[in-house]
Length: 267
Ligand SMILES: [Zn+2]
Ligand SMILES: [Zn+2]
Ligand SMILES: [Zn+2]
Ligand SMILES: [Zn+2]
Image 1: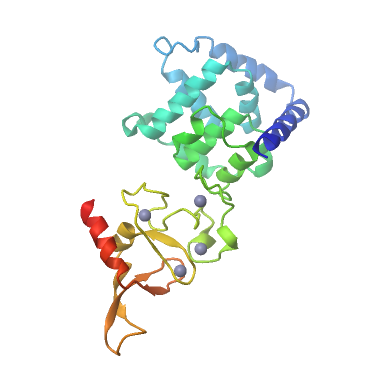
Image 2: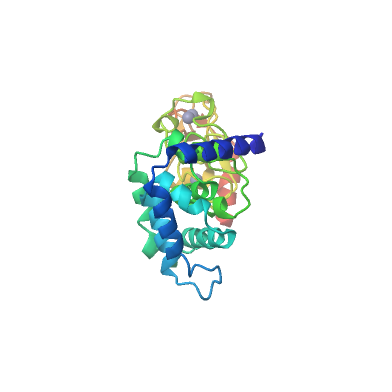
């Protein structure tokens, strides 16, 4: 299914390029190409400002013009661009020069599904990596289809490669899902917005009512796990409860909390 959508999208892209580009754009692309003449892929020899400049253009300039520019780049040049994005996302000390890119991208309102669907695939992978802060999109393996990348960019699909659920999951209208900021209740913690063991804990606590899960450590830190009046015990007694950020329901935790505290003590 993934392959099918890629093929479909690239066919669309070709048509789009033919009918969409005004006359001056190929000239612009040629200028950008000659400007990248020293962009020869030999990492030691390449001027370090060149990929930075192209990345800034990808974030700020016309989507279709940059699609044309990237389409004519050789594979090595695209790999240098990917590597620059990887280092920008992974190494905070290299971030300063490019640190404004995510904010610039956030401010653009012209990047609709239709426009994004006409992007060059590498261009789209770079945009999604910058927007999500995840280097996994620029590994060069192209594991995510164009249509999925577009949805991840627009925050209607989970950015976790191992999940990729359409979000909000089950059209959930809870306080968190309804903000439509890409939160995925199938795999993410509502406190830190990370998935799997990214927050240095593998213990999760769940809500009885809405089934949204939260890192136990994050819930403790936000004081979401605390004693509350019990429904089942004698009047006036308390039980440890987890208060859900999504629906506000307090789930009783009984013996489970002991395991949570043990796990956190290890970290
Ligand atoms: Zn929800
Ligand atoms: Zn997910
Ligand atoms: Zn968390
Ligand atoms: Zn809940």
